[in-house]
Length: 263
Image (cartoon, rainbow, N blue to C red; front, side, top):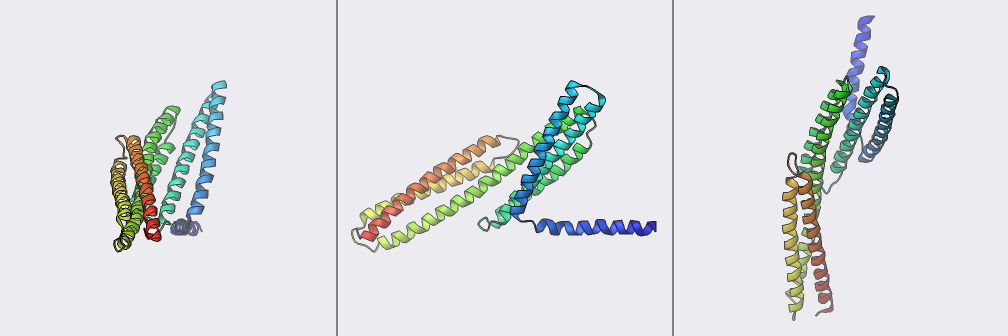
């Protein structure tokens, strides 16, 4: 009878392991986002309980209240890890479901997500091993360091997605400019049109340069280093590129207007 019970439990655990990947793969980005919101709310509640426990200990420094601070602190850290894990899963699925993001970029983001998920599992083991308030503080500081690494990975990946999108906009403008130029070259008195197209082309080239500069800055968004500064630099280059493309779009519209009027 005992053997049957053990076998049943073993089969149950195996079934759970086999079903788990199916449940994860079936999760949509919308479901994952809701799971993150739920985890975020649970994390806020756990933090509130930990703050209350610290207030109780400050008012009455008993061993029982001290243990409550440790227990609620561990709960709060685990809840924070759950929140980050849910956020990573949501962002990963969001990118995976986006057909406009190339496969190589998706793979790179997936690798970073997997790396950070492993870190979360390692931190959970650290939290489980906490026995006193000193260890609780040490694990918290370790989590802060891992958080900065996570933020760097997310910022870098976000930058790469923005660079990809900016390049696609530049491709569209480039194609439009080439088509207008093909029409304009067959027209008489086309000097003004070609002048507008030349200015648009120059702006597109400037945009390409700034997009490439942004990508180089985002590539350096890593720890150790100066990830926040590099991320800011990349954003600034993209802002300039955006201005270049808006200017190019304006010249292309002017050229189109001249072509339509036959000037």
